[in-house]
Image (cartoon, rainbow, N blue to C red; front, side):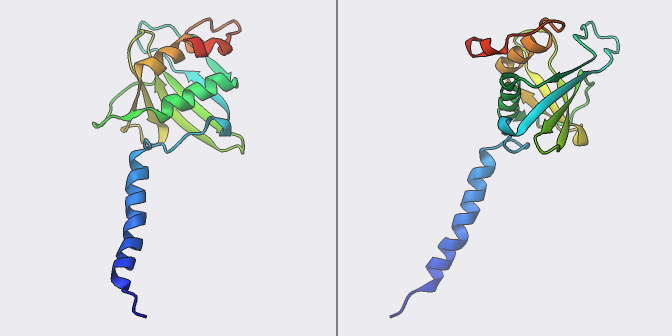
Length: 159
């Protein structure tokens, strides 16, 4: 019984390569951020440096699952900015995962509705990702909303 090995080997070598290409096209450069793995998100306001924007708080930690899910969805839907970036920092953002691991980012939202946000990994501040205007608007409502009072995050599904 003769089995031709050439085509089988080629097939077995081709499948992993195609799978890698397909999967790499389905994710942003962060990889997939699973909201269920994140225990908290801390935003630290950076000095405005002459900007007209108001600082909604000095530092704030978000533990509400709705906020965490929105941030994870915004990160997962972000698109890579092709050029190197030269930008200030509106917020330093720290994702803390359930096992204690942390990741640091720079998050720029601005206060103007309808504008995209910018997300930059802290370890490589020349590479950035745009956050859609829709996601940025939702985040702005929580971040720049009533910073001193309780925010009803359960209403997010209606935004």
